Image 1 (cartoon, rainbow, N blue to C red):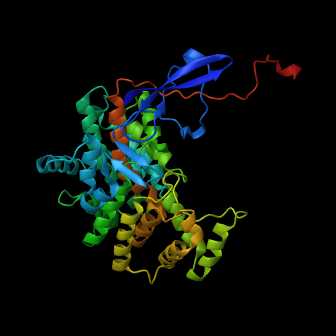
Image 2 (tube, rainbow, N blue to C red):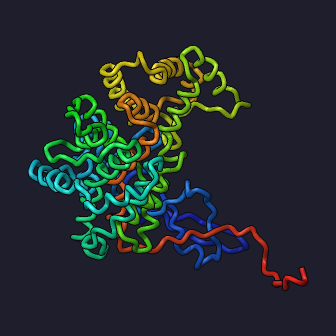
Image 3 (cartoon, rainbow, N blue to C red):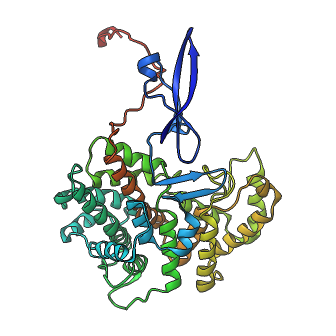
Length: 431
């Protein structure tokens, strides 16, 4: 970030104020309003913070108009095609591509921390069997601070590093255990001889009575899902993690807060909403009816999994995810699954429809990831926990960056107050 010679002039009430303009390495210039209240006595008003830069960061850059997503400068499509999830984790955490030795060391550290404390099993058994896996994850991840006291001091760089590795390593184990608990099956311990994605699939789908062999196509598809969801700049859950972190909260509490935010249907639940829409459509012959409803301005129905709030052209993650979806469906087939049949035909008809082309309403990453997870056998209740597993590294990277920022202040948004002004209290007998 560099301070340019440009300034913006703000005039009101006969006074003029000069606002510095900060220039990023990519993206639009930023008006620096940090001293605006002190100098002018006014706040800015930006519900949802959609026009406000809440921090400076070097991790992820998005250009929604171009359909561009960069992690530390590396395009997401290149990472998803040529890299794998743990290497992307390294890039997000440390900023550069690892050497072979660095990657081997990092993978070993993650692999050797995948087990959770045995007493944490008791936390799972305290939940009802029908508890949503996300509810379980929020509780268990928050409870990690009660078990790993040696990595909660955020002022110690080494403890921050240990907490980072632990969270990335243990999150798949926690998510898989939440799933197993919800379906009444025994927990499956992780295995150090498997890669990250294969280990997660085995913990979810194996049972003690029979050996489970992970199909490499499914493992690669899961790895891509993790990679494509690893970080997405200052979204709602990441901002939640940063806001919690600004108070000095321990890393496990901060990530639990991020999981809770991700649980919202407008955020991490988008792929679940997409599958529920496909179930509502029900059969291929009803697709024209729902496409017509999506075009009708007077009908509140909209096609889930099409278009994106940030990407105004196309979602750069979607093309890679589509490739995985095609590979998985070719492997597992769609003949016996009406939802998957509807998904493939809906994609075909929407891509051929001028209305969707003109409005750039293309299938996004949530549309394809939901299809893949459905085909693998995951219930929709597991879609958001899987998202949380993937996004943990992004949350941790943003958390570590913020903790090291010399400009760190506790988050304290302002408000536009529209309530009553000061008035006197009256005793109850006089009301």
